[in-house]
Image (tube, rainbow, N blue to C red):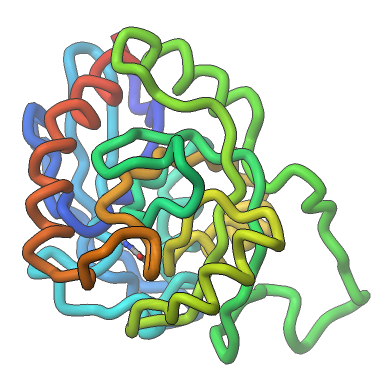
Length: 245
Ligand code: HPA
């Protein structure tokens, strides 16, 4: 056992705690960008050191557009994290992305606005542009795919990141589908880009919580979203356990 942290898990809606994580301690981390969504939970799964952060806060009170993404990613980096697995609920746009599917996305289109989305902002010695052609860390994506093989995880999707907190209109989803989006969520940006700016290896598991707006006869309810997430989180936990074992 070393102090090396194998990876961090950022839990999204439906995953505010990581069952099976033997908690060692909780750490308050302050950053130059303000406070993260909550304390960092240090724990173990078997021999492996994992840290966990609840993106929306441990009581699920921070909406997607209010999350201090810069503080979250900075906090993880500052305690020695190198790899980040982001769990995120999404709506399914294209036919394979049905509720309860687990998806390992490989591309992003950013429709968010007004978020603090970069560390390369002011007081710079030099203007900096990161390469973001492949927004997710391919090595960690492949590890997730191997870990999730028996769980039927889907390899590859374009994640459309919307501003929220409202859900989309049917026309917005049609436009996103024409753009090439397969799933829609509210948190991958700026999270993924900030991870890249910090040199973190970042990949995600999307959990499909509902058909996106206009893709089913029914209106979208929070009850439906929570029910599908509750049904899927067992598989997410299995995925994370096999990633480390
Ligand atoms: N749209 C955006 N974000 C989401 C959705 C959705 O339909 N479902 C879960 N997160």
